[in-house]
Length: 468
Image (cartoon, rainbow, N blue to C red; front, side):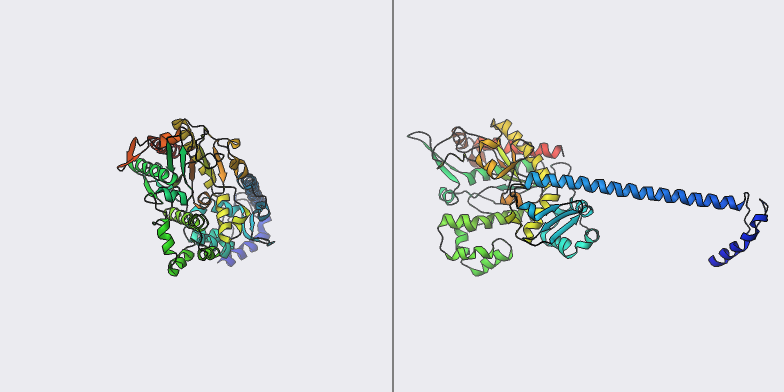
């Protein structure tokens, strides 16, 4: 039929010049104006469509170009702001008009490349993707990233609009327990107040009871909370250091640590060297415990993570007498070293920190928390010149009292986090307040000072959630 009509139309053409304006043609169509004009209008219409089409294409290309330029500028600034402490990072990471390139070691060719369209797709999703899934997307299926994101139904996690139903992980720093355990992990002190009085503090106990008080406050508001360790003296492994020392004599247990990426084969030889407890703790057990905490938190998939520590004056060497210094600060991810990029897992995690909003959200959360701690405890926000590690190992953020730092948990935990250091334990006033057992939690006597710390954390979290 299509050919027949076309043929009839061709047969009519020779007679058009002699055809009156309103005469019926063999096709049965009335023509009220000369067909020559009709054809000219048709061509004119096509020209308008073509112009509109090319204009639309130009606008889309221009918008994509502007978007790419904006993305390039944004991530270049972010790389400089949070990852410029180690200059070698810029030798491994390139941000160009084409996208983001990450090299593996000395290789000239990038191992990971994302164009700007892929960055836009992956940015809100990457913190919800496991390391194995991310490797498949970026290494095995890199030419079809957008296809597999849709195919595998990878979506941005919907966060609750309020603290009710929100998942919040709480990590009580260190281990604590008996004073001897505090000595083993180098997180305790005996402060001479005068010739007749001494004060002993174990940081792991302070952090645990603070975490417990914060958990109770958040639970009362309907949040889903989890603690990485469940008692003083216990690690995230659910056992204490002494029990762990016995378990590592079992090869099956050691193999399970390796299989779960909790210990590297490189440090296995240390276990055969009969190290002193302090050395064994710092060089092996501590990293196993940290990896376990990060693994538990990421498996929980929290909307917020709170990491609780208490600080000391770094210049008060020995921590056997008090200091007049007292500051509040918080740390967020950043300052990653090139050594962290030696493995594929490290490079994938770096990419997450670079393109996800995790750092920006962590800065906002941390800023809200330190502001509330400072106001409630009457402790000033720290400045860069107040501690050498803030200039040597950190980069300041745009929020006062908040610094990016390459800490294991800050680096490995996905999503917004606050790594808080609310006060100096060895301060002449704080040490007295922290050991005044004028409050209780679950029947255990505690200090009202840590109750105030927990309350300040809670208020900062609520402000962050309510203003998101």
